[in-house]
Image (cartoon, rainbow, N blue to C red; front, top):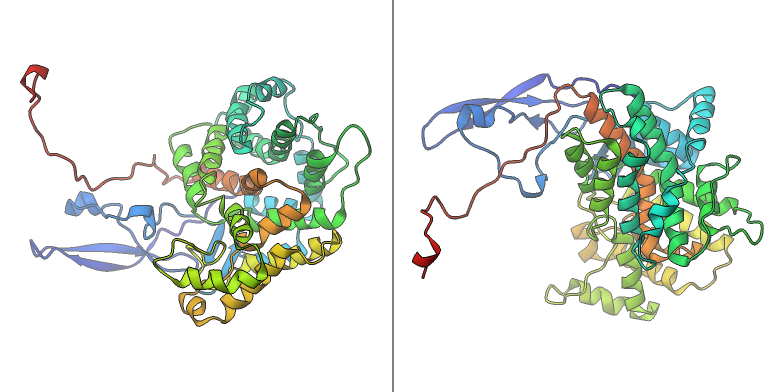
Length: 440
């Protein structure tokens, strides 16, 4: 795995003045390769007796990373310095996996070996069958995924020594390789269909679609247009800096937990509707609107601060410009619908009208509420025949490589410490205990 270049050399300092005591403190400012400078507060409490207060950590840098960079104002997303648009157009998911793990795009020979090694790790331990059979048939697929990934440490305990670089590499390859198999099996289990084993002659996205939709009854040929769209979706979701699930993986990993447990924690975080469930919310919103003729009515409701209705799939916590992934997803959406012969798709018609309004209406433009990547992904999944309950599972399949890359970077970072956020305590101060008979 790649090593993170040290960027923790002070660039200059800022002065903090304590108005109560008149004391002045010099805080170092660190400069990364790009993006805003960072005030180093690691010694703040030691020197001043104060903590910083930052709910949600929106103004706090939790780590140094060389993997992903986002400029929300410009609408920029870079993987290891490469623009997401160029990767989605000219690369494939396996190349992007290699890039995120190792720091640069592979040579032809490196790619061949990497794809081979991933492919030959796609099978699951056969006893995983029995483990899956323990779930209720109507279990949510994300519940199954949390359990399956967490259980990998019991089936593959030969790669859980985080101090061993080879163990870390094997565990990383196993999770990237086995995640589509587990996702497909979770889907098959919900349908009551037989599990489909991976095939070594298929590429990553093809294999995933094959395990999802094939049955033993007849041959199944993977549609190349759908495979390309799935590959692009995986690329777009592979990593996204220090979001909630990635931060969860890092926080769990900072304790020394095994990698399978850390990724299971990331999946649990992703399950939350505010994180991984956004594309499902977009689909439900479009179904609520019901018809293109009602779009303007719902847009008007969205502008009314007293109306509980909210437009889903617009705006982003990080991007204050057009989400670069949304443009690519829009193209894939049209390609998939055309390939499948979907004509006059009401959901797409509504989506197009909503996008047109959002890009022209002064209310949306002034608030920078542009369509984001979730706006189109749900429509693509629906067209492919993927149920809503599996949307977030597909997100987890894509994001696994990002989690693994971030976890490896954290383990190799000599400055990393166990995560231990502080708090602003607002509860009762010290008070004496009373025996039960004395309490009235």
